[in-house]
Length: 275
Image 1 (tube, rainbow, N blue to C red):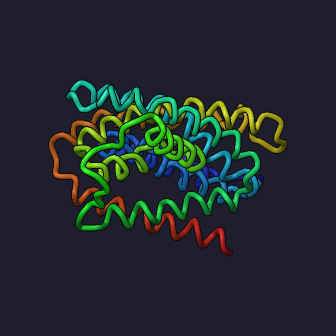
Image 2: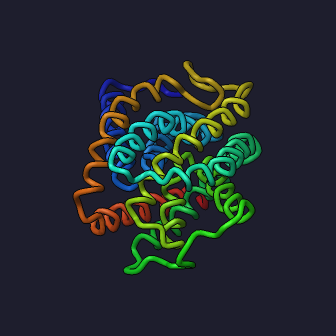
Image 3: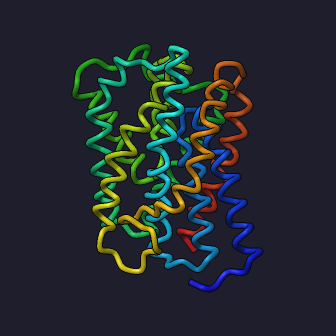
């Protein structure tokens, strides 16, 4: 890595702090865990510092997951205080989320940086389109019954959330809404999903990155705990604010604004992949 000037270091710190505050608010507001903001920001910052490109995306995803462990708890507690966490749904989806997330964390070792960027960018485009649609796609009036369909839905959510470095809300909120789960209950429950995804996925990224060379100091596998420690006070501190806003604001325009940001981010990720 090249030596950084004081100005560059200051800009990086400001960028990380601003992204962390935004991620914390969105974690509470939309139940998205914050990783959908943190991963591209961390990736761009690592690229800006001439970090080894084959490690940039893996480190960004894994470090984001480490912060989501704590951010999701803060967000879920705030939603639970308002009765918005569906505990039956949480228990039903927990095994699939944990298994899928652990598999994703371990599988990441065998996917190169371009592959992770393609997964992040491709899914983010689909999510952004869904958020911009005037009407939410409805598949059924109720969630499917039985462990097999719920295990499949939760397992796929856990797997791709781990590979994207996100808490699960980005995928699970649209999915739950498609099965007619009330939006605030979907957001609140998705906030709790984040913990069930981030812990096993983080373990997977520690295992898969354990002996990888050229990692920066203060790294545990692919997780850089120094950067995670910088991010955490802001994401955890601002998640309850987002949860309060979720229960007082009409989130339509916020969702549309976030969808536009997500679309721009996704296109940039895919452009970097094809470059």
